[in-house]
Image (tube, rainbow, N blue to C red; front, side, top):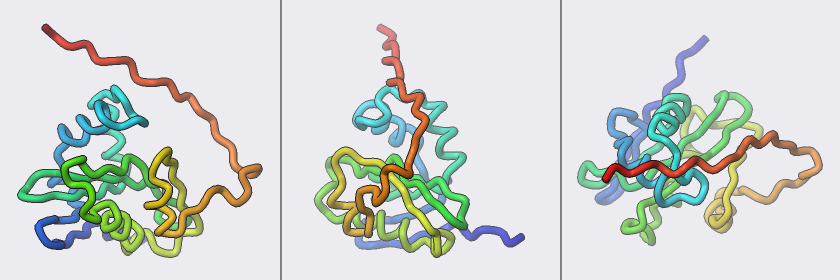
Length: 157
């Protein structure tokens, strides 16, 4: 069995795009997901950390600071799920989400997959640029959802 080559990195202008987990800033990722995202509001730090350990993560950095993130769950042979995609608000409008998606879609270990999936409430136009569409046969898709919002964290006074 051959070992996967997961590390990819390139610079584009002032931004570094990387899969090097050593560069990732868990506090930035957790803050965005738990406080600003609609899909992971109040997610505990431990859940974010575990989700990253079990995924191929992609980051966007400038001056050593993390400004974007995405993660991919895959068997690296047939299917991949893209989740937790974000660019911090102050860095939006610069094409970073498109470049991040291009990096994901072009990653060498994610080529030749039969199916890519994701869920979004508001970024359809971004993903459509990469060939994503509504489910062609939704009657063939099912889910088991245990979705419950994470409870708010208690703040110490």
